[in-house]
Length: 300
Ligand SMILES: [Zn+2]
Image (tube, rainbow, N blue to C red; front, side, top):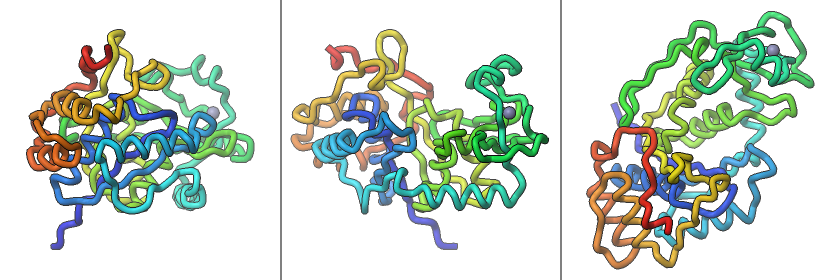
């Protein structure tokens, strides 16, 4: 049997310039792809609407280039792909696993037990046959047990119905959910390997559930630790993560390599550093934890 060639991707939300946390995620997925002689794609996850701006996407691509992280092919943008998400929604509808939900956020939290990510939707509207128009659309999780082997974090298991509950695939305002968009994009782009931050580890089971319902292949997963600030919060625009300065690319790349448990390099260009790091890349050395403090001196 012919082996599927490796296709990886970096899929940031274009909400601002690259910071240490996003550099780590980009670097890990880049090195894993290059080590395997594979393809590395970049995709802008901008379904989240107004916070995502074209100038942020441009700034992000410029910093990837400055760090030597050269991607293959065109940069895909989720906002240009809504027709595909609509097709997937039709396929799920045909399988009878979707339903309209009229519950407000308040109603859900009042009637729900807490799961892994807050209130678990108790399935109130499952059998109410509500119209989709003006309502959220949820996917049923009845009895789904999802288990997968993460290449860094080990075996992951969720009883989806108990731990997460029926989740939204299209919001009341008509926007497709992140979970659905990611699954459709990964399948459409032939992604074989998802390498990303462990803040998305618990989303994987929802994505695998959708892959199974849609008849897609499930990719391999590797979730690397998320970089946190001194208060233990994930570095992001909201937690005021400092930008990484492309003029100090070597220093920042070495800090990111050390964060990932990989040997640092004395190379003098980002390209030479990345070539050496791709060859030496060993995921077994990545700390198998969900979060790690970012290197403090770097934040000074
Ligand atoms: Zn409901």
